[in-house]
Image (cartoon, rainbow, N blue to C red; front, side):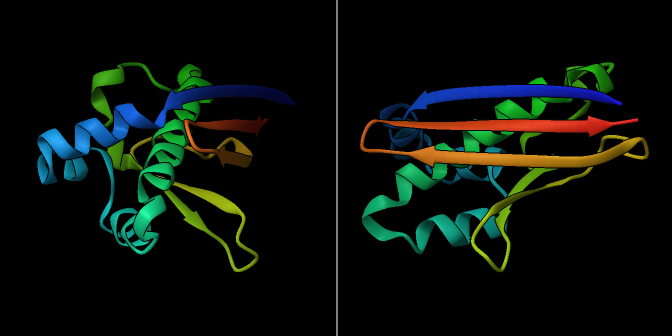
Length: 124
């Protein structure tokens, strides 16, 4: 068994500034349609949710870096953060061979100023 982990933290204002400055170009480059729909439903707290998903994608890249030969062969939207029925975040990943991955666990959190995520990967 192999366990790898990735963690990322980001200031929420950086995501807010990118969205306000670049608008849909930024949103569509970084987030999937499902993620945008979810975050926009959070109204005043939408930037916290966008930042948390951004951090989860960064953490996933770090945890799975050993599986990625060329970081330019994947894009932000190859990672999608959804919530399961219990409200726990889960990662959907495309563009990476996951056949030897047994489990991927993601934890995200945010407050007024920061969002943080940790991704743990269990593989054969």
